[in-house]
Image (tube, rainbow, N blue to C red; front, side, top):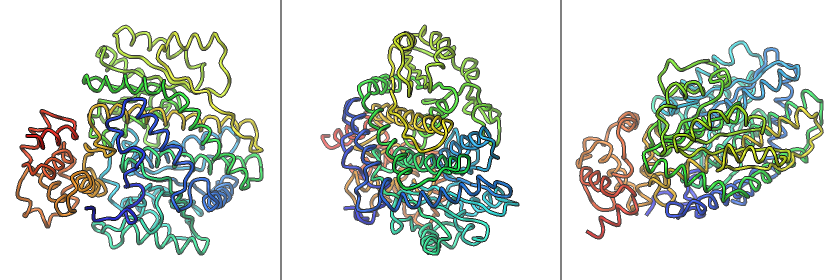
Length: 589
C-alpha cells in the first residue's frame, strides 16, 4: 500500500529482491547475498547507465582531463571533494591519499575535502549538518578562497543531501571559478524533492540546474545506477563502494596523466573499472572464511561484547570508517564497534589534527586502545586486524598475542598482490588462526610508471577491505536483530532524510498507508497516542527529538502492525527484541 510506486522511489531507497530474507539467513548466506549485490553494483542493467557503461566512461574521461590540468598547474587551483557521512569519508580518504601520491611524485598537493559536521564526522555520526545547504555553501566558499579555478566534486549517493546541494548551487552561481561535478547513484528525475527549511530550493531544483549546465559543458553529472542497497537505504555499502571506485579511478588516472604524460582513453578507464569486478570475485572467493568472521563478530554483539578493528595506514582507516557507520545505520551503541589506527591522528592526516580532546570516542591510536581498553578486553570481544602487506605482521603480532590471552576472538584480514611463500603463510596462520587471506588479481597496465601501478594496487586493496568490513558489521548486526527483512529497523532519526526513511520502513513492513505510518513514527518518537498536536511541527524538531529517542522504528512498527500503544510496544520489544518474532508473538496472543 505504498504511496511511492517502485518507479518513483529512488534506487538508493528501494528494497533489493536479492536480500529480502537476509535477516533469517545464516552467516554464509548473508555473505553470499552481499556478494550478489556487489556483482550487481558493477554489472548494472537497471535500464539506466551503470558503472561500466559508455555515458559513465565518457564522464570519467572528461573529469580526468579537467583534474589533470589542475594537477599540472596547481597554483591558485584546487580540487574539492565533499559529502556527508560515508560520502564525506570517501572524499577525505581520496583527498589525503592522492595528495600524498602527488607530493611523492614531485607535484604540489591540490586536493581538499569537506564533510558535513567537520572532522569529527570522520569518526562519529554527525548527521544534522547534512540538512543545511547554507552551511555547505559557506564551507565551500572558505575552502576555495583565493583560488582562480576549482573542480568541485559533490557526492550524494541518493541525490538527496542539502549540504551538497548548497555547495553545487554556490558553484552554479560562480561558474567563472567552479566546475562542479555531481556524483550520485540515482537518475536525475529521482533526485529528492522535499522542501528544505530556511532555503528556497529543493535538491531536485539544483540537480535540474546542474543538468542544464552539463548540457552547456560547464558541469558534469556522474550518476551511474548501481541498484538497491543490500540493506535498504544503507548507502554506506554499494553507494560508498561505487564512490570509492569512481574517485580512485578519476584521481589515479588524472595523476598518471599529469605526472607521466600518459594518454588516457576509454580503454584505460574500462580496464581500471574491470579490475574492481575482478577484485569483488577475489574477495568473495573467500566467502566461507569471511562468514567465520561474521559469526564471531555477531556472537560478540549477542554477548554484549565489542568488535574492534586494528590496522596501519589506509587499511586501518578502512576499519575506522566501517566502525563510524554502525551507529547511524543500526542504532548501535558507539562503543559496540570501534576502529583503532596505528599512529593515530598522525596516520589519519585529517585537516583538524588531533581530536582526542573531544572525548573517548575520538581516541583512536593503538596506544589509546592499550591505555583505555586492553585491560577490559574479554572473551566475548572480537578483534580484527586489517593488513595491507605481510610486512605488517610483525607489529600486529605483539598486540594480537596479548588479546588472545583473554580468550576473545582475534582474527586477521590480509590483502596481497604477490604470492606468499609457505613460511609467511605459516607465520600469518600462527598469529591469526582465524583469517581471511585475499590473493588479489593483477592490476591492469595503464601505461603509467610502477609508482602508479603500486598506487592502483593500494586503492584496490582498500576496496577489498571495505567489502570484508561491511560484511562483518552488517552480518553481526543482523545477528542481533537490527534488520527486518532487509530494512535497518533500528535506524536513528538523525536528519531529514532519515525521518522520511523511517516512515517508508514502517509503511512497507506493516503494509499501512503513508499517513498511518507517519502517525506511528510520531507516536513512537514522542511516546504518545495522540499525535494531533504534532501535526504542525517542523521536521527539524522531530530530528532533534530523534537524536535522543531510541527504538523509534521498532516501536512504530509494532504500533502500526499490532495497534499497540508506544508503551505496550516497548514492553513487547523487551520480551522479544527481534522484530519479525515480536510481530508474530503479538499476532498469536
